[in-house]
Length: 280
Ligand code: SAM
Image (cartoon, rainbow, N blue to C red):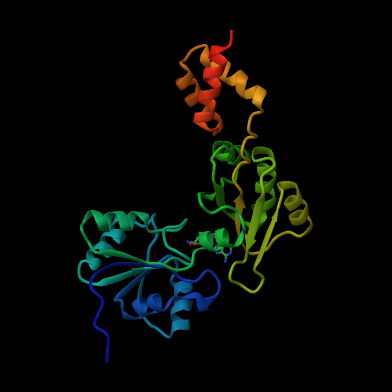
């Protein structure tokens, strides 16, 4: 029995990042049943449709598209099911779609998103770096000064940093990381889900040496582990910190300040602050 037509609205659909086998059953079903596909490049999406054995009306769309193109798509969404795909992976993740989704939501149109592949999540799960907190920063700027400024801004962020990268720029980015993120564990995740998939970890210097000798081909995600935890202060240092704080604050406040600044136990610091205050 034929499935019922899809309800009108916008369907954001993730597609494979290299291995066509990664299309989800739901993505294939929605692509097969939709009325229209909005895509970055009709040739690229045409290949995916060929693989799925589907023919569909396609509209070229990116966030620089004219207001009329966007308006036409938004108009269609009120009566038809419109699928948004990008060339690969999850739309809107360093890919077009943000403006379209925003306007569709503002107009009260139905919007839903079908999860699937993204180089971001594949790289994160593969790199063996902490994933409890991460910051995705898209592509680094290509000019040295701007790239250094961005890395300088992010250096203190207590999270794994994730960047999209290209082969020709990899060594320059690693060199900037050696300067701005010294001592951090890095990972280069390359050609994910494809035949020559690779994930290589190391210090910036190790990776610079490797990729200078073996210029990388293909698509790349570059990750940097979080900054190292600051070493816990020694007992003498703790006393000095508490004495300095006690000059301006009560034992309870001093303990709170030092605990917050150095990640130490507030109760123990309070007991020590009381003892220091009682010293002649
Ligand atoms: N929306 C896509 C996603 O969800 O992954 C990303 C699109 S962005 C324009 C393209 C960048 O994603 C590439 O330059 C590369 O940094 C990364 N990328 C995409 N596919 C990849 C793959 N198979 N392996 C490694 N990185 C990939």
